Image 1 (tube, one colour):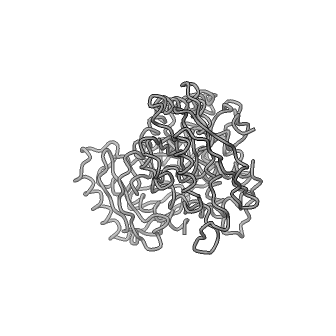
Image 2: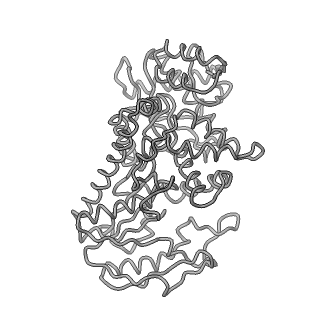
Image 3: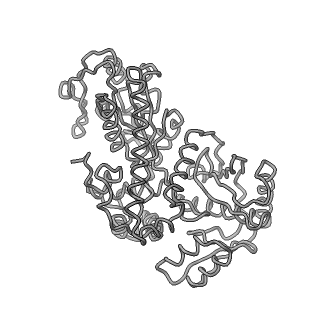
Length: 492
């Protein structure tokens, strides 16, 4: 289903780009990021100001293209021919990217007179692509389509404003401009010209500056902001972030303490089960929230608490084997876990005492103007490499688990992201060039007879657009990326 959904969404994007070209020849659609339950796009070089009327005109042209049931014609051509085609249409970044591919033939699609290269399969025609909505979303537009989870019913998710998330994504694009790496070709060029070390150092400095800013804010409210709750999806780098935040809080003269949310798991036999009867360790009910609240309130009052210890082998919450803890009146307590943003986790602690941080890897790079890099693909590559390096897991196992991981994120993390007081972007603009060298051999081991093979091949195709970055020693030992590739100062 996931692959069918990707083909559908890619085809609708092609209809949008075609409609803009037919209405405003020479205008450029820049596909940016997912937000507000849709895909945010900017329009450059429009001959008229973008407003509600222009968006309605574009939507009308898209509906017309769907009604005409135009064929989306696939044509194979030589790499050199494709390069010349896109140079002639002034799509220079696309031409440069195709010229670097290690293949003799490439496939392009046409809709009417418009031709493009969309890095994946499209539907054969436009007739069944009418399930979309187009919203005016200054300074661009929002394209809403059925999601991966509503595709079977062709249900279009309701628009949900996510101002904090959108602002964080927009800021990540500003970082890409600072680094002069808006597209993959920019990153590859920096690598080939020997400038990748500087890109790495500036990327890391941008993150460190942001972490320092968070710590400064907490320190500026010492004595009030006591419970620091950190949450985010899989492979977002939560643990490394928590360590780095602790260091910056120490710089500010604070003495933070860290508590593992995992130690508040209920006994295995008391854990809720999911629809197929398996223990559901992802749901909030798997945690002893009553005990967690009791302990946090006691700590904030200056009382001593006997922290629990969860034994993952026996499935028992062991008392008396944890640690005794008492904190001072201005010591922050750092707690990391997937439910940190859910107010029900810590509902007895006054909201004004809490500072919630959402962390995710929101990739600022695009492949080119029409083809973004999905955040989920970047996180999956992180997880593949980490699971192989430190958990002894083969790529097939990680790929098999990914759908369940994503389902859990949709239920327990993403709905609460706007509850965050601060959103931190853990993506590093150079990281895919580093991860490529680790991920490709792992993905090659997935056999063609398993259902996960198609996902493995799509990730391998994705990796080919990046030049391998071999200057790994340039990556500092406190980098979030080190959590996945090794040699992190925080993981001995």
